[in-house]
Image 1 (cartoon, rainbow over the protein chains, first blue to last red):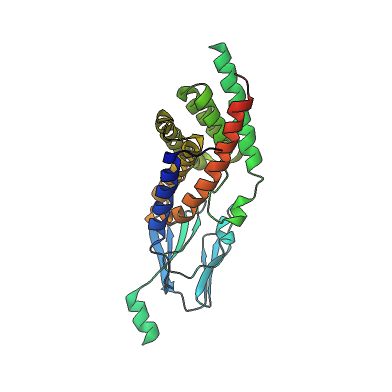
Image 2: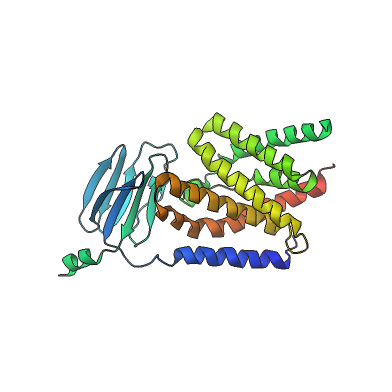
Length: 114
Length: 163
């Protein structure tokens, strides 16, 4: 295995692009947004325990984190993703075209803190 | 001509077998990103690209995509795999031109990263949401690792398999 100069530069570029996409990760979010086919279906608080059923997908919000509990898709990647709680994190179920993501909503913060 | 055709047919069949076997590697349960895989069939595409030509390589790649999606998944996955395969083949062809600057590892990693980019872009289009692009934070570093593994295998293939 012999790497050339260009390879190293390429690797660095790829890692830095990945970092660029990572930037908005981090803070704990407070709103769960559920999208299907690009349309927002639900926008609910992350801090209220809840269980929703969208089609054949069961989404559970519990103790400030959200996960997909059950889905009828073949690959079950969405269930394997597990819990998410940080702003910008996503759970995606491609076969169901479903996307669960977490946002930080300043209005919601007021409600929670105040 | 006949020789080239036979070679392409054999390696297309091999690519199909490799991607079928790849389904048994449970990488998705370790890194939970939809559609993540090693992309081992790319070493066959790389091998053809280095030893035959670009046209044959892209034909093998398209054949593999079509057969695999007919056998195992639906037309939606064909859109994903074709977009990834075509983008990565075109990027790899461009990089092979600069062979003083890039080794087979660079070419393979670039192909794998391009594949990720294309597929996430298609996923963003199909889902109608740009948030899917977040997966690139995980996919791109993984593509470096898988790209190096694929490059290693392709290098061995080029050395060992007689023309």
